[in-house]
Image (cartoon, rainbow, N blue to C red):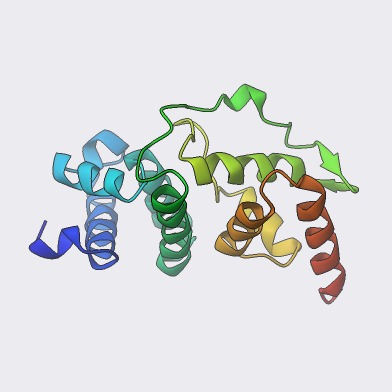
Length: 179
């Protein structure tokens, strides 16, 4: 990793690009994809190796999410990590079993309760290794209700514990979409 690795976001782009090349070359697990200095850099911006691995893997396998989307999500997490958490991880890991089921619905919208909780977990940096914010289920859902990954994450941050506000905003935005 070059000297730029410690500069955000240039260092992030460098780590991401190297990870894509390494994944394509066969390093297909989080522990094989990143060097110790890259893991330390990622931790300094509130990103785990597993979280970036998941984005890289989905991109290499299916062409999405784009780097720009990953950068925006990571930038929001980084901002939350630095401003709200004071640059210190919570030390907690959420339980996948505690999440609402995929088919759980609110306001008649399946998946919404689940992705709201996943976004909260992502913001706090408490994502368990088997879970991903922005997975292959999240991306089409968010697109169907008129959101990008980072936009929804920002909505959840801004709303805090006010789940009703999040639901209202999603319902309003989805009504504006062409049918």
